[in-house]
View (tube, rainbow, N blue to C red):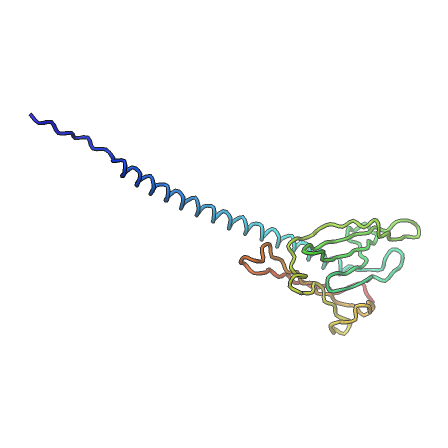
Length: 198
């Protein structure tokens, strides 16, 4: 009587090949998931940077529209340049006029506020409170002016010392979290007519 073995197992070579294929499949899945999660994280970070830039530019426009004479009687506009603007406005609706400065510092869009104090009211530059509104701003890096100014006739101003002629300001903010990667720069634009300037 002959006895035949009915049990058949994997040889060592077959087990090594199967293990290798399994490791390759798991590695491909893990690599794909990492790529997807990295892409989603970047998209969320870019959206957050753009959202804070949009909020900041909307606030700057609102403050500029309400520019008015200072508590000490000074003219509403203090100074203007392509990367900054300084003026007086009641940004917090407390019936006191604050000195406000919007400016780009490296790749940050910032706002500085000085409250008036004393009698007669004065604005102490040493008491300026500066906050960062948006990061990853590219205006300086790509040579794009953030602020452009127009006079009462609607003509683009080139003499930034003639503050009495200012009537209209446009803001242009370029944001990109990772300029070396897609998507390209995201540009925000807005404008403000100065309502309280005669």
